[in-house]
Length: 356
Image 1: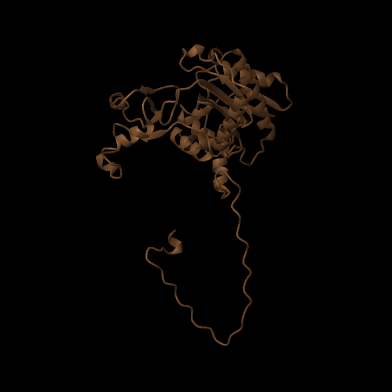
Image 2 (image 1 turned 120 degrees about the vertical axis):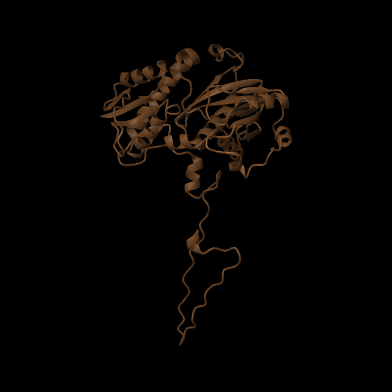
């Protein structure tokens, strides 16, 4: 029997529907249930072939427990190691390297000193920063938001420098992004599951929360194809199994605005009945697919192209680097006497090999 578990917090509609949907399919050898943890011991396997994680971003205990689960063979959706490693600034930087349009974005040190630091801790940071250069790069209006986290917490829209200085002083120890505002004609929120299943939903972020999926525009087939390709490219490089991507279309160009959401909103009252049905059915089918493919004793995680290309020595967006042909050993030449080997001199700045 292969168990699929779901780890969740305050949400109820999606987790319960997800479990019921899997069990209603009556697939031999597959069952789903809420996870219950009563003990966590190092190196111990969990009873789950697959775990869908909906809450570890808020509960560090769950995050490290999931890493042990992954280590011992569970397919965790999403990969807890990558989820711990990435952030909104890095993700934006990555998009600039793989051809995904993103708003101009700068990262800012926290206004207040982090805990256990003092002014001397920032010997490498210029003071003041080149604010004029930063503002000229990003422009106004702009948005300021934390470089990690989500849920529209601590997000500010700023019209000018005075507003920036006022609001930045309120952010305490948060590390913030300053990001160009994209004035859009159309906006879309897109589910991506398994790096292959995409649902593109017209979305109006300026509406009240419960009305944001009530948008008055419909994408053309050409636009749908364009956005689907962007959504897939983003998730293939990040390696997320379950994510949402938000795209703002300006002058015909879809800009990726918010695309690191590994526990995306899937509440029935929020996303609407049709979108809820799609995400429940697709997530259930994908979890079953992963359970059937899961193998004990090996890594069953999804790793994105950024990591895979790095490990394989491949360019970020290209083919593997060609290996140089092996040199043939030179023919041996016998001599009556051998000169003693001279010690190689190290040039200035060179280090011995064992110092690397």
